[in-house]
Structures are given as structure tokens and as C-alpha cells.
Image (cartoon, rainbow, N blue to C red; front, side):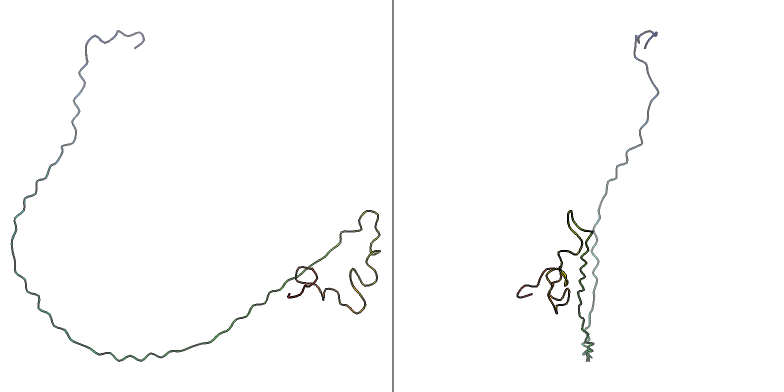
Length: 112
């Protein structure tokens, strides 16, 4: 292109030959052939005994819930243990810690 003379006439390149396309023409000739298929039926009566075995098994489920309450330390201006009293928070004499608490650490309500 650059520095060459422009084409003055078309150039003839080598011939490309594509693969030959194959065409198939089907012709059909029909013939009739009689065929006999005899049949016979034998009736068989089967006597079956069904033994039904059972293996009763039960399962149960136990849900275990654990609660942990920790204190990182006294808040500002507080002394550790000063507000709890001798029986802990909300406890009175004869009460066991955690006995009246629900599964999430709240006091039990009616119907729980």
C-alpha cells in the first residue's frame, strides 16, 4: 500500500474447490407379507401369605438450656457486691438461685 504502485487491473488467484455436496434420492417399493401370531393364556392362581412384622420404637427429646450471667466489674462509682445484699439480686432467705428463672434468665410468668 505505502510505497507500492496501486493495482491497475484485477489479480487472478488460485481456484478454491469446496467439498462435493451429496444428494440422496430414496425410492420405495412396498411388499405385503402375511404373518400369523397365535396366542394362548394360562391362568395361574397365586396364594400369598403376608407376614406383617412390627418393631415398635419410641423416641424422646430433651432440650437443655444453659444460662450464664457474668459481671465484668463494678460500674463507675459502684463497689462490687454493695447493691446485691446478702442473698444476691432479688433473692430472699430460703430461695435457691436460679430456681424461679425461666430458660432465658427471666422470671417465670403464669403459663410457662
